[in-house]
Image (cartoon, rainbow, N blue to C red; front, side):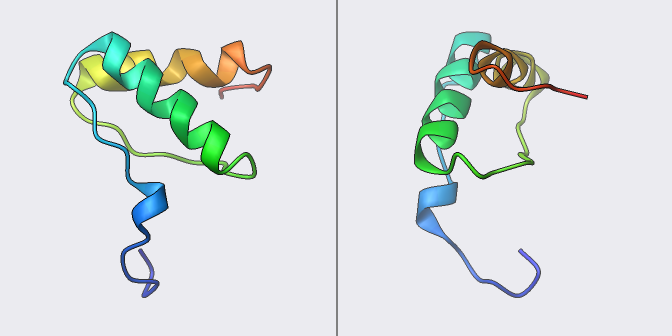
Length: 61
């Protein structure tokens, strides 16, 4: 992360499902509401992760 080192509160593990991605992203939003980017893999978790910001009233480009 651009020389920042590991920041444990920015890492949330999921169960490789769409629901897992949604839960993980919701947890990240709760921990860091100022966040404006995320990385998710595999595609199933990424699809779920896209729904959490929308549910929180945020835009997803």
